Picture: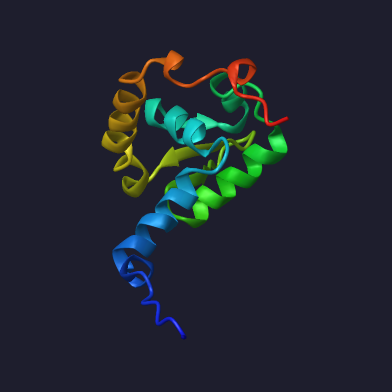
Length: 125
């Protein structure tokens, strides 16, 4: 007997699709740290080294381009000599501030000891 499975309504829900797109953008590795650094103040490329340690220049460049394409930040090139490039959040990026604050509150509400350490995880063998 053939089963008629109804597709999950959430899969076709435009709000759900928009939500997933937003999570895909801000959930990429290092993206949250870059946005968080820009919430404090605009930054030059070299200033991200101090604000986001361990982030490679290659990956920083990639993430900055992605965030610029999404309209979350803007890259401003000065007309001065030497040329300076400054990265700044757009109003769309600034609108993430209460979301990041809420996410930080949520993360702090859980004790780090809630998750079992890798050494304590049960063995599959």
